[in-house]
Amino acid sequence: MPIYDSILIPGGGLINDGSLPPWTIARLEHVLTLEDECHWIILLSGGTVHKPPPLNPSGFPFFESHEMAKYLSSAGISSDRLLSEISSYDTIGNAYFARMLFTEPLTLKKLLIVTSEFHMPRTKAIFECVFNLPPLPYKYEMNFEISPDDGLSPPALSARVQRENNSLFNLRSSIQKINTLEDFTIWLYTEHAAYAPNKPFKPITDDELKSY
Image (cartoon, rainbow, N blue to C red; front, side, top):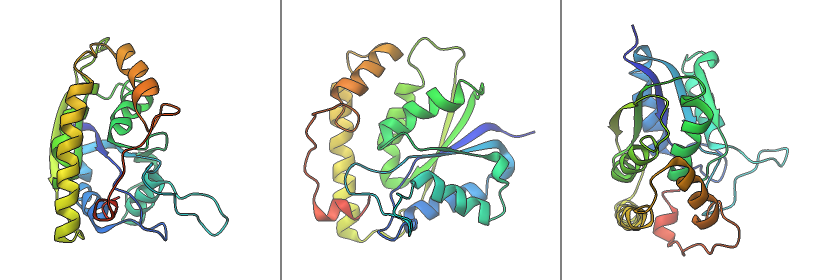
């Protein structure tokens, strides 16, 4: 019997040619070692708001989750087990749309979230927040596993870790008054710069950009 109903993998960005960066590949390689422990594998993210999406030869954007699904499929995972989400553009959206589009419609209760070491503290905080907001049709059981930060230079990794720490601090301040899924939905679409209209983005450094 599988241990988990689903394994979820947040997006890690795309290289300019549309290929996956090493740290995202490390997440997927880790999942390949766990493929017998779940039924569904959910790939998360349409892209990022921090840079324009790479375009395919036909001029259409590559979607992060689709490229991750292609990688797992080429490694032997049946496409019938792969679910791709393309609505989110950051980790908060990854969690929100995973719950809205997949875990509750499919009654997926036991979840494993896999992401890079640099990304894990904020990812864990976000998923635990989003997946505990009432109304809850059932109690989620969430587990987390870390994959290595492959491919990031020391300056890029240091910059991203600092950004993650700052973002986690700001997130905790922002969601203190959020107590329900309704509250969160309103906050996401009225206050979060990735989803709300006319909200300014904070500038991102060149070293930070190398990890997106």
